[in-house]
Length: 123
Image 1: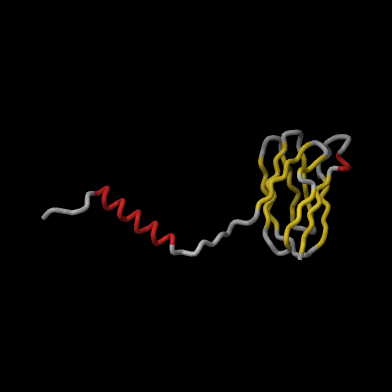
Image 2 (image 1 turned 180 degrees about the vertical axis):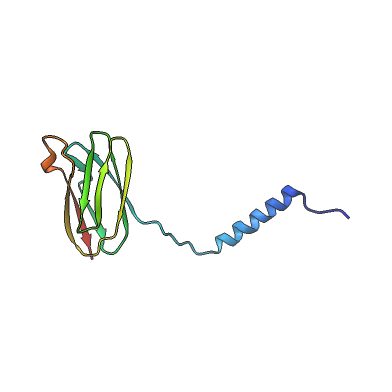
């Protein structure tokens, strides 16, 4: 008896069926919004962000000048060191609306006291 499908033909047919079935599944995303923040000596860029209350958000922090840090007990952000040349991701879910000012937690020079990131949490 002769077979109508070669091995590669079955694989292609199966792939097409799986792709069609997956396209029928509603897209759900467990991913949370991500905000890129550049950290440099004495500044965060952007230095002010707005996020909704109750929504898990990730801050993707990178620096190319020195070592810096952030922390906020109110927002649930643990002490996080941002080493030079690395991307550090911090995920948190704000529970209360308000304006939160996070200061650099690692002394970084003469502008350190003015280095702040403002997070506005909207209801």
